[in-house]
Image (cartoon, rainbow, N blue to C red; front, top):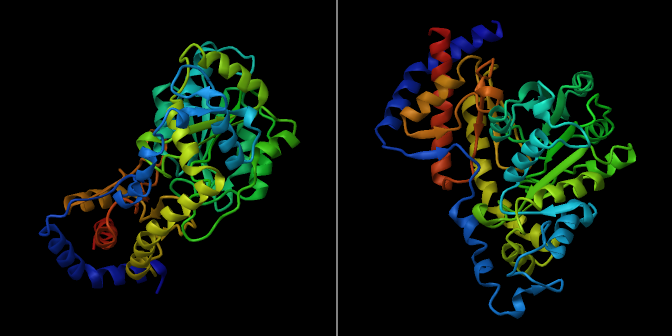
Length: 421
């Protein structure tokens, strides 16, 4: 019997049971959310002491600066040093800003659009602007491009990172001005780029001199099961003579409080000097008191890593529960596969083609909210309608286990409908 016939036979045999299980879920009045990678309350509680670590006037003095006052457009020197050590880059090439790295990415897109980058004309004067978008990818990256009228080119991702032969081909187009990358524990696939991929990216020779790689290193120390090693693209780009090729971003959002973390960006010396001039028209200085709270509280990179490990310990059972349920319910079905990341905040699930939207709809009708199907593709259009992003962090362990079971029931019911069983 062929794989399709075997699959049909299995699903047909399970149909009545699945329908009964789904009906039972609908009567439970569930209201569970697996839509976004939000830290749970237990994770937020880890950092409550941060709110009281500045008590005196002396606490507010650092680097010869009173952090309560204006100034320091690129952040406190000690904050630049902390992020420099975290990312293994020169602190002079770090800008420390407010709470959101996504905000810093959006600002860089807008600066390039209105003022230009790398000595080039502003994008608004250059006609069509295109970005390479690894898929499945991060919906917020795609939304920035969509709002700014940037044409997005979906880029297939393998287990080692983007298809570099295709990348090298696409960057010969001078209209291609950028590329999004989440290089470690990618959102949502969970992969980490291989050393060869990082070197290949760092060595690119794009036709556009204002092409930049937007290196969103959001999960650089967010290990859950074990640590993936990521090659330092900033170092590799310098080796390749591409010092100004990369904009790297990171933040403490998922280390303490997502609404009150600290974000940074890294760029080549030439770009940094130019960006600081542009920022000086936006602000007289960032929230240095929040930066100082982080410095006083975490003290050094070891403190950041220890807190990341504590988060990983809290998240791990939830990932294990989802993966165990997927394995128990869906193993052996040839149309489905899922990622098993070592860290980050997501699991990527591929269901039967043209059933992801229906799967999400079925789950919602039974009380579980998932990331909308299609969100992991530019313009929210997954051509195969098969990818679903799972975010296990926020619900309780009991709730996430229940939600994962319901999701699996919905995956199979959607497939049954598609096959006309």
